[in-house]
Each structure stands twice: as structure tokens, then as C-alpha cells.
Image (cartoon, rainbow, N blue to C red; front, side, top):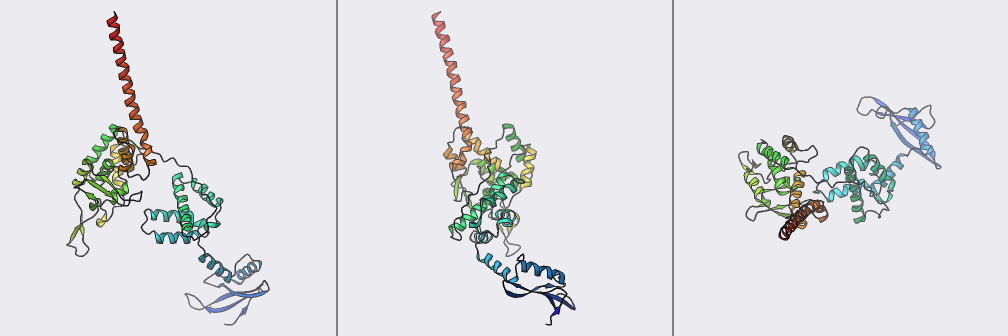
Length: 390
């Protein structure tokens, strides 16, 4: 195609068919010398890129001064980034190898919003403490410490994965975590428990009510209850199998009488088999959602019951009942910490220790009672002795 000169040195254009329209448009090119070498490259189209001779002249000046990368340089940079194991590339590889990981959707959101924008193109070995400090300080302005900790834990997991798979050198980086006080144990007074039981009985949302009863009677986590399938329940031996719990290893807990009554009251849901509209099968889930699939969460139903019962605003409807289950057993003085750990399926006894003070208070009360009884006994003995002497 014929070259057409412009009033700007080193700028010319050719005429080409207009993209997405009729007629012709100018395609601008720049010619410049750099490091003794003559370079020529396309700069942009008149309409498609809103390019003019004046803009092309400014771009030429930036290329000469090294303020802008040439097209070959850009391609080399992109190729280098593609070949490097960046944080973004490592995360993509991690997801491929952990497709069924719990909480992957939340982690993807954390990565996309908080890690990728500033660290996605960097290699782990190139990270410095300031990179992490900037993220932590920025997020703490608008997010709770635990939420910020979740973001930084994800970054640490990505880096550890890369190191374990030998995708990068071990970075000289220590990720400082924000301090979090998550030792929160929730309890209910006798009046609050009675109000809750009445609300559960009167609620028309039987699904939500039964979910809350299972949390109250078994201490199971919300996710474990939602994952519960009929095949996981051994009615004969009275055990519940908890598949893929938070600790990672399948667990078994006893099926007590109260929980048994809840399960026996549930009518199994029939759903279409998918082969024929007239054919139906029973859902495998105890608490099924639409089309018999796993129920995600019915926060509206449980929140309504919580409101009717008049429970505190900060009381978490399902997780709070798990805590109440644990505090009730610990305060009874009849359950040791090891047994409580097994019932709660805690991986480590450290988590169970938050309830130890309940047991200690019960023992202290019992000890104080013994002391008071002994004092009364001593007073009675002294009184009897004084009566004999007189």
C-alpha cells in the first residue's frame, strides 16, 4: 500500500478498508531510530483507534525516549510473564488441582478482589514485606481482622503450594497476620432456651426448625447438617457419619434420642428422576434444596425463628446453637474435654479448651458447696459440744 507523508517527521499513513464500516480509513505508522537501529511499526487506525498524526508523533517521541515499549518489546514482556510462575498463574494451577476444595468460591472472590490487582503478576520470590503490609493496612480500614486474615491465609497457601511443587524459590517473606479474637462462646439462658423451643414448635418453616433442632441436639456444624444424607445415618446402631468435615477426616457421632425424633419426623422429599416426569425418586439429602440437590443455606428461615424467640442480635442461629450444645455439656461437669472434643469433631483439643472454663466453674461451684456444707457441719458439732459441757 502507498505511503502518505504527514507534517510530522517520521509519521506516515496508509489507507485501508475501514473496520466494521464502509469506506477507507488511515492507518498510522511511526519510523524512529533506537540504539542505532531503524524501527518501523504500526501505531493505530484513524477510526478504530481514534488515532491522528499528532497522537502518533507523541507516541514516536515516547518510543525514542524509552517511555513506551515497542510492539516487539511488549510481546517479549508478555511472553516472559506467561513463562513465569506468577501468583496468578500459581493460583490457576492450584484451582485445577483442587476442584472440590471447600470454600473455593469464597477464595476465588478473595483472590480476585484483594490479591490479584496488586500481586497477580509478581513471582513469590519477588515479594517483599511491604507488598503484604500494603494489602493488610488497606483492608483493615474497611474489613474485620478475621476477613483480612482469610485473605492473607490464602496468599500464604498459594506461596506454600508453589514452594512444595518447586515452582519457585523459597521467598524470604514472613506474612504478618492481624490479631483476631475469635474465642467467642455463645450461651442461652433458661428463659431464652424456652423461648427458642416454643418458636421452633410454632414455626411454619419446618425445614428451618428441624435444621436448628439438629444443631441444638447434636452440635453439628451448619455445613455438616446441610451435607447430611440419609445414607449417612445408621438408625440401627444410632450413629451419624459426618463426611468431609472441617477437620478433613470423616467422623462418626452418636445419634441421640432427641436428634432421632427430629429425623423420624422428616418426610423424605420426592423429586423427578429426570428420565420421566411421572417417575420420582427420594432425595438423598436430609435437608434438600431445589430439585432435591444440596440446600445451600436458609438464612431467612432461621433468622425469623431467632427473631420470634427474641434471641440476642449477635447470636448466630446455627453456629450459636453448636456453642450452646458444647457449653451445656461442659458446664454439666459430667463430660470430660476429650469426649467433648470427639462429639464436636475438633481436630485439635486446643479448640475444645475454650469450653474448659465452663467445666472449671462447675467444679468450683461443687467445691464451694462442699465447703459450705462442711462449715455447717462444724458449727453443728461445736454447738453440740457446747451443749454437752453446759
